[in-house]
Image 1 (tube, one colour):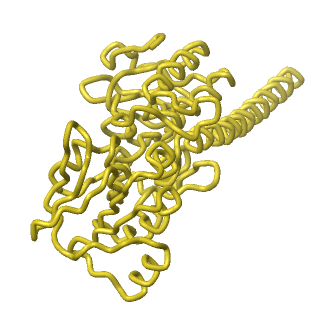
Image 2 (cartoon, helix red, strand yellow):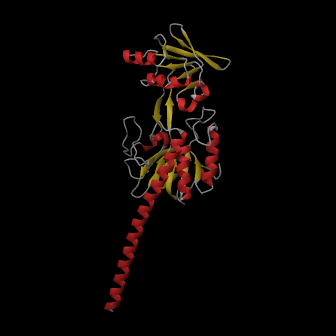
Image 3 (tube, helix red, strand yellow):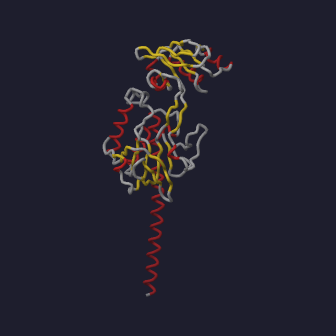
Length: 334
């Protein structure tokens, strides 16, 4: 990890231009651009990436099929070349001060910084169906853009565990012609049924979903409470997505309708100096778009720093001129 530090080894006396909380694609991309801009940057990472269960990462140009952990390893090495401090640890709180923020690390020091970038992503809250968590990222999936091509043309079951489950079934239809929608205990409207039927999606009988079934470490079906087994090789579910943003509690950041911290196109939140990138601000962001969001935030953040520095320099120059003029006046009087 280059110059990675344990959180107890980082100096709490340094003033950073930016502390980035989260060392995934968005956080490291932010750090890369800021490091190349010769900014003093720290990345605090707890080592819990959302895509850890996935064996490969898809849809990232030039990195398609690369293991997620390998991408992060390469990214950490790249940012280290530009003097970015990589700190293994967990940020617990962010506290504002008149001209900076204090980032408290769990069991470690307090980092002082002019800006904070939240790049902690989100976590998937899965339905309490036995077998789902064990198969997650393997043959129980969420994103067809991430995994659909790899499981194409296999029998799919889409589990009705979320208000968006019907729309998910309509979407994944283009990756397979063999799809069954399992409504579980969520009632289907007449419109839902019509759309599913029009799309060629079969509808299983309603009933509580008991568990997923495996054979030889492969999914082969979903069992319902009435004993029916719905055959499938792949199951899609829509998890509840929860942003990992509790570190910002108490700062007053405005949130959007989905509950995520609201940002502008550059990642600025409603609190000056606080930024959010990647899935922390947009649950739809894929790895490649999360990385792009980090780069965009870094550009804007650096410009904000330059504006502040120019304003400070102008103020200092005017003060120096005033002092010189006052000194010249006193000499003239003598």
